[in-house]
Each structure stands twice: as C-alpha cells, then as structure tokens.
Image (cartoon, rainbow, N blue to C red; front, side, top):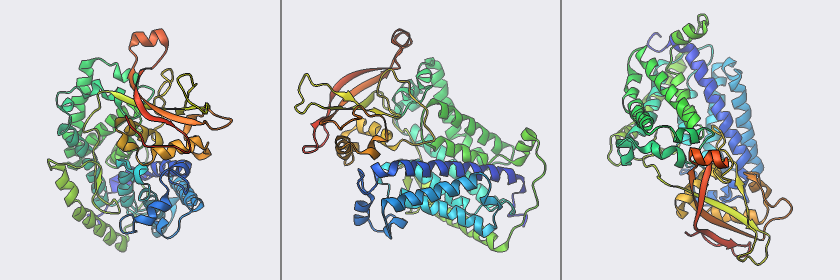
Amino acid sequence: MEWFSADDYWFARLLFLRALAAVYLVAFAVALNQFRALLGTDGMLPIPRYLARVPFRRAPSIFHWHYSDRFFAGTAVVGVVLAALTLVGVTEALSLPATMAVWFVLWALYQSIANVGQTWYAFGWESLLLEVGFLAIFLGNAATAPPFLLLIALRWVLFRLEFGAGMIKIRGDTCWRDLTCLHYHHETQPMPGPFSWYFHHLPAPLHRVEVAGNHVTQLVVPFALFLPQPVAGIAAGVMILTQLWLVISGNFSWLNWMAIVLGLAVLPDGFWRALLGFGSPPPTTTPLWWAVLVVAVTVLVLVLSWAPAKNLVSRRQAMNASFDRLHLVNTYGAFGSVTKIRWEVVVEGTADPHPGPDSAWREYEFKGKPGDPHRRPAQFAPYHLRLDWLMWFAALSPGYAEPWFTGFVARLLAGDRATLKLLRHNPFPDEPPRYVRARLFRYRFTTRAERRATGDWWVREPQSTFLPPASLRGATGVAR
C-alpha cells in the first residue's frame, strides 16, 4: 500500500512516540503527586462532589463508576508505569493490537483524570495531550509502516496550535501589533523561569524583533507544514527552535514540549540519517484491518475539524476550547492579552490568637510562583505546578479564586499534610497557625543596579487586602 505508508518517517515516528510517552509520564506523575490536596475526597474541589452533579455524558471518566483516593492514585500509577515502559521502547515491540491497547489505556486514563479535574485542569495543554494521544493510538508499532494520513493529521494539530496562537495574539492586545508585548511578558507571565529576569532586560529593539519573529513563526510558517520536503521539515525546525526559546524563557507546563513533540513527527528520516548516520529502517508491514481503521480515524478528524477550522477565522475566536467531550479535535491559543503589571497574592499565618497591628505574620512560600524577592525563579516545566498557576490567576481577579481559595486557607489552618506538600516552605512546622490572611502585592523585576546592590530578583510593594485574617471557624470569601 504505497499510498498508505510513509517509509521515510520510521525514525520520526519512533522519536515522536517516545517523546509523547515522556509527556504522558510527567502528566500522570503530576496527577499522582498533587491530586489529594486539589481533588481528593477531602481536597479543595473534591471529585466525589463534582461527580454527584455532573453526568457521564458531560465528563466521560472511569471515576463515574467508582471513586476513592486509592483508586485515583492507582489510576495515576498505572499511567506512570505504562508511559515509562513506552518511553524505553517496550510498547512498540509488542504486537500491533497490544501496542494500540497500551496507547488507548494511556489516553483513556488521562481523559478520565482531566474530565474531573475541574479548574485545576482547565488548561489548553490538557486537551492538546489528549488530542495527540488519541492519534498516537493508531500510529502503529515497530513492525508496521508509519501511516502517512496520521502524520498529516499530526501536522494539522501543529498548524492549529501555532496558527491559533498567532491569530489570538494579532486579534487581541494592541501590544502584539505594535511589537511591544515582550516589554512586559517576561515579567508578568504566570511563572517566570531562572532566565526570565535576563530575557526581561534584553534591549527593547530586540524585544520587537522577538515579537515580529513570533508572528512569522505562528502566522506564516505553519502553512509550510503541508508543502513537500524539505520545506515542511524546515518549517518544523523553525517551530522547534522557537519553542526551545520559549522553554528557557519561562515555565509553561508541557505546552512548548508538546509543540516540539509534534515538530519531531514532521522531520523525515533523511534529516536524522544525515545528522546521526543510522542505517535503513527495518522492513514493515501494513495489515489491511489497521489501514481501514486509520482511514476511518482520518475521516473522523476531518469531520470534527470543521468547528476548530471555522474558529480560526472567526472574529470571535475562542481560545483553548474543546468541541467534543473527548477532546478529539480542539482549538488552541494563549496570551491574547498581556498583563502590564504583576500582581501576587502573598499568604501569611500567625500564631497569635488575637491578631492585631503588632502580631508576627509568617509567609508561606510556594514552589514556583514568586514570593521571597531574594529567591530566583526556578525551572519546573514540563512539570506543572497547578496550585501556583491558579494563584497567578487569583491575583488577576478574585473571581478566579472561587471556590477553591477558602478551602486552601482552611487546609493551612488545619495543617493538612497533602496541602503543605504543594508548598516550598511551611513556616509553621510544629503546629498550624491560628489565623491566615492574604495580601495583594505588586511585583516587578529589579533593575540591574538594584540587583547588584541587593541581590534581589524582585521588588514588591503591598497594595491591599486579598483575604482578611481568617480562622477555621470564620473563613470568608476573598476581596480586594
């Protein structure tokens, strides 16, 4: 079946599937490490409470049949194990049906987690992983020929990811059109990385060049993905390099890495043969039943692509939206608007039973989000710190903090171990505080002179009260 096989993409498929398995591994590890405080039976947004009000048809998940914290943990462990085995090459060595079954289980288990994850999983990269993970089910094993139709489907995902992000920017904040967004973005992005301070202090003309280059990469280059080689490979290479630039400039979970993974599937074996010098791929086969299934999946993707394609050219373009319950074909985009000022919610506790002006308040430190001005931002991506990200949104508007923030405060007051594990530093190691409060601060990066003088990475100024002092008996809502 010459029309079906893409024989010059055997190594490309191998790299793509191994890299996708690595992302799955991270995603399941994040779920395993964080779910008890966020979604567990006693968590901030308990899954059982969600399942009681949301039917299966709206949120397909195995947890509708059974939920317990132990079962959730077991589900995540199975995902970690299967992803790890796939990463080291075990899965592709299995028979074709067995290989497909492993990829299906990975997709189904993560689908089950994401669909009950509520606010904690309301990110575009969740749908992206599920969409790409669905296509991976049908890409075959080491003994089968890479299916050309699905390789094109992967390029279609990469096109929508990049072009959608470009369109949401060019239609959004005026700073994208006047090329000034990067004067602010590195400082105000959700979770700066260890090099973000340096990126922020690059010369203004270079920031303009960066924005212009971003527009070319997202609005022009994606069309080249559907041209013959080597043009398509060059386009993918440009995207990969751009995404690596974003990786070192901030923490965006596995979003950038998924774009890189998709780009790997576009690079033909001739590129890797010239770079690495490996020989010819092993002989492959194409079972008829599998070819029929691949054609059916391609037709399904084509049909479901109507709504995302229409969204790309719509003046009311939706960002990071799913058009079906299983996240099979989605729309993507990020940073249509760029915040010009960085706000941070600083959470503090006191042992004083009667807080007053002279009470000593001690600050909780988060793992990723800015806190202590002297602490350099850290690199966590592709690992996703869900609580830290939601704290960034909460600082933008108190509405983003409901209904989970008061539950977070209550768990600090109770000294909940699962919640404290999500933090970098617990200032009350012996017993929980009597009261917890939250204050809103304005943050900015230090100048070069300030950094030399103080060693600080940030300058911060208190602005207002986000949450008045609250005890276990009197926790209330948030307000500015």
